Length: 260
Image 1 (spheres, rainbow, N blue to C red):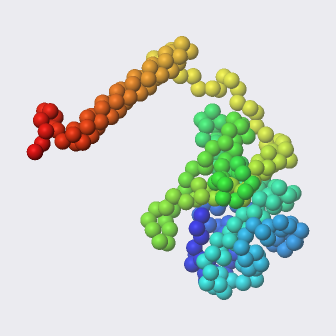
Image 2 (cartoon, helix red, strand yellow; image 1 turned 180 degrees about the horizontal axis):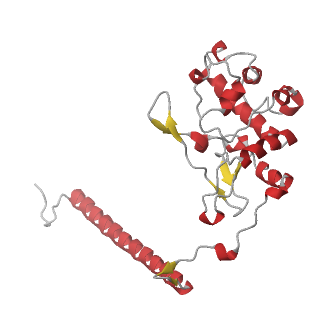
Image 3 (cartoon, rainbow, N blue to C red; image 1 turned 90 degrees about the vertical axis):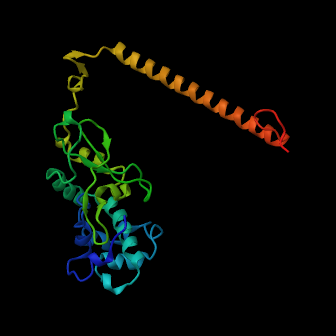
């Protein structure tokens, strides 16, 4: 996700609050300053972003957004904050911060009808930045979904589809939702019962399993027929092209007479 320096310039709010207040960043919590200032918590991150020291100074408000004309510095700082955030939310303080957001349904609810608005948790499918965007995990149906896109006005264009769909999944990591539910096991909902599964019906009657087999068979037959038609058309086209090539090489027209 590209971040605009101009949205932060001239504002007195801390950088972390600005970042978490961006549209589409509702899933982020504010990492405690003391956590970021402890070098032990940042071990190994220096090699992950360019200008590590400058990014850290920007995050901790040691320098302002106007102190640098490098537009890549803000982007790198956002990447660094995401990596720090992934570590922070699996600490006791971070889990508590995410608990409040979960209770407020800041992460959204499950799109599956049978889950009846079950709150979800953010999850990354990879722990490496740039691999995939953030997803949402439902503890009731145990499924992972794409978060709904958030549309909003940008400074440079009309409505842009940004929001959660462009937040990197590594900012939350693969561990968080499962550790969260292990820590707050009272929040683990009852699993979906087999009776809650959707049952296809036609005029009130359940669709028999054999109908599905017929659907699959008819679909396979249609695909085979389409492939055969395509193959025949290809063969005709190849034969026509070959005949045209022969006619051109021998100097004859389609009637068999040679050209002058």
